[in-house]
Image (cartoon, rainbow, N blue to C red):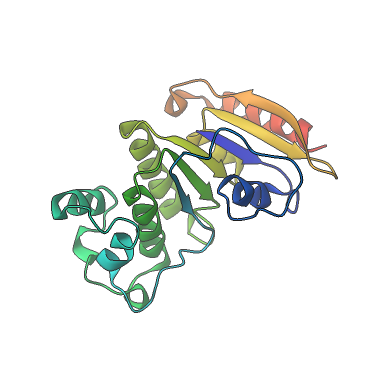
Length: 199
């Protein structure tokens, strides 16, 4: 997993949209992704309110078997909510459905744009741990945009720091594994290195 971090307005989300093929109005080119299946988790869940959880997930994977769907929902803590509609879900559950929908597409690249925005901290930490487990278990390549350095450090193998106007990549930082074993001092050292790139 590669995390993109940088000050607000530096172009992180724009770059993700370009990579995902949603924004084509730019000069230059992005190579190596034309034949890749890309699953995207947006800043907002963007669920269809007239479809229940299962139907929202099946939109991108209509041929998914019931067993595979139930397994995916169970992995994200959604098994008891498959018949619920988005209006019946908390924001945390709605975000889980959006992640399930992206994973149901069986992506080769999972793109996550601020997936924990507006969540309380304890829920965000649980959800980020779930995502890391799924990425590792399914051997996915993932690209994360986050304004939260703790999330970036806890999830990523590498962090790319975007900075300046026009935007540039200031530095790239490798994260030692296992991430869960890092000391507070190591985390603070990584944050200090990121902060230098923001300048």
